[in-house]
Image (cartoon, rainbow, N blue to C red; front, top):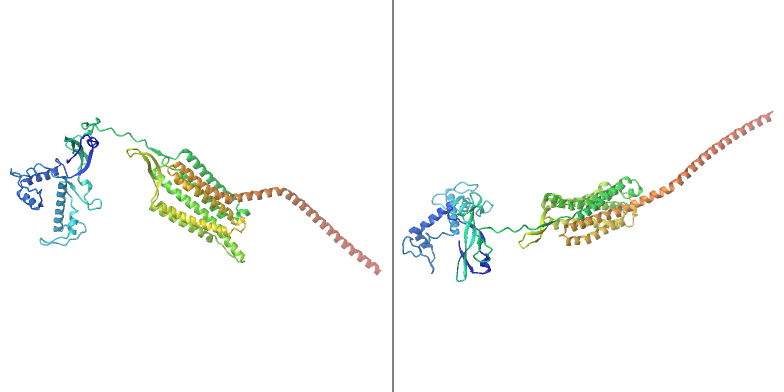
Length: 559
């Protein structure tokens, strides 16, 4: 190969020998096709016609090479063809010219290839550039530089695997006048036919020695670097334990509130608060709390595909749960406000379940559209991210992360939709502020939203700060979800539970005296009824006796 010179004893001169250069090559002596090309190249030095053609095309300048027959002793350029090998560019140029020639022949002969239609031509007609180009890139032949093919990757470039690739060993040459020359010596090549790397002419790769001078060399490959001590950061058992505990508390609280609502749905307090909407709130909180489960999944318990599914599931659960909860609160308040507004004008209005379900269905539908598009277009994938590397660029600390294209746009869309739902719900709560608390619960809804906002306002920036610590992210995310669920259930259901307990306690305290009084009054009523019946009978008897006395007196007067 070509040579380069460096200052003897310099750092570059000490570091250069033993390196390798990977490059493409038009061919090497010993390759059958290249040897045929080289044989024809050698003949050019004795071909007067070819040399005359070369001389006619060479530009005139002071270093002009004027080729003459190399068999003549007077040829000052003797040995150019017979002793020199052409550069790799010559083999590529030769094959390119052959491809253009074959393309021209195909275009002239109007060979039927593909869907291209070329009108018939005779010997005097010409072909178009488009047809010439089309047939040229269809060329497929064994040339000097390897198998010549074009366009397998969809482009019109030559196939990358249709030529030779060579590994040249950088070796030290002569040292003169304070400089050392280096040249590349081919030692192996990529064999296109066998798809393998093959030693070239049984040459051995010479590595740089460890003697610290320019003469040090060895054929023993240097030892590989020891494997890097890579640490893949996982979720800690403590963080998972806390997360699962918060999840269990949220799920139990949601289940308890649902059971309480269903079992006491005929009680005046639950009936006034519309149990069907309270049940939806419980379902939404249940979904939100269950989102902690996919948050706790990493590649210690699931495959990369499973982790990718968990990444997407957490957004589905949080978004749908939040949507169900606030759509139920909104529908509940909207129904009360509509009824009370018409009641003030002494108007009769009928609010059907369908009327109430439409706003919630619209909100849920908007969330589902964003989630479905997100899942189809750019779903989450579990990827390993490198946080730090050693001096050789090898990873030292890695973490698994959920990655998705345009995640900010999708999250912003969900926040915008759910944010509008919160604002509308708060407005309905403000409108219902003067309605009985048993009916509107506006104060408790405002308090729950405030608690959620505070948890999110504080937690989200901290999540960004500790994003490189998976355990901290899990703990904070679980805490935000749990606080949201606890705030909703606590402010909505606990007042009802305490009111129900108060009613039950008052009823229990007054039930026994009331029963005794009722029994006493019942006995007194029975006694009075008996007395009235006795007196009524006596009166009737007296009336009959009076009538008989009057009749006897009347008979005595007649006598």
